[in-house]
Image: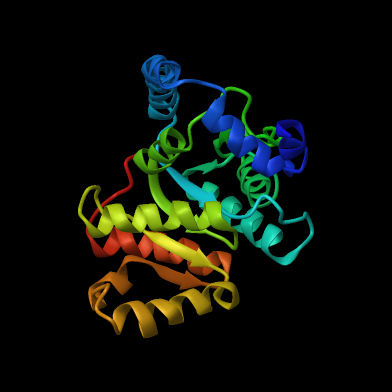
Length: 243
C-alpha cells in the first residue's frame, strides 16, 4: 500500500516528502552547523572581489528576456551609457537582462561583473562577464548582500519574482535606514506602471507606506533618463560616487 501511495505522488510532492523524511532532526541540525562555514566563505569571496572593483551600478531583470527584444536592447544601452560614465556594471550573471547588461558594459570597455547563483536548472555565467569578475553563490541572501553593499545604484528592468525580491529588499533597507540611500530606477514605464499605481492606490491609501516612500525610486523609459536620474541623485545630495 505504501508503494502505491508514493507512486501516486507527482515529482514536486515527492521532493517535499523527502525533504521532511530523508534526515532526522539531529542530521538537519548538524548540516545547519556546517553550512555556517560555507556561508562565511561566500561572504569573504564576494567582499574581497567586489571591494577591488570600484563603484558599480547593479542591473536587474528577467533571465527569460531574449536578445533583440525591447527590454534586452534597453538593458544593453543603459549598461553601455552607465559604463561610459565610469561605473562598473553588476548583473546576476545569467542570461536575458543580465546578459544584456554585461554585454553593454563590455561594449563600453567598462568593468563587467557577474554575481551568479547555482540553480536546479544550472544557470551558467553569460559570456560578457570579465573572466576575473565572476562569482558563483549557493545562497541567495549572500548574493543579495553583495549586490547592495557594492552598488552605487540599482536599475531594475522587467522581471519576475527574483527581480521583485531584489527591488523590494533594497527599498526596505533604505526605508528603514539600515543602509544609505542610493538611486533606484525602474526602467520601462509600461511594465512598472501597474505596480506603481497599486503602491499609490492601495498601500499608500491604507497607510502601509508613507508619501515620502514614493521618493525612494524613479521610473524611466530611456537609457538617457536612467543615467540622468543617477547623476541628478549624486548632484542633489552633494555626493560623489565612491570612485
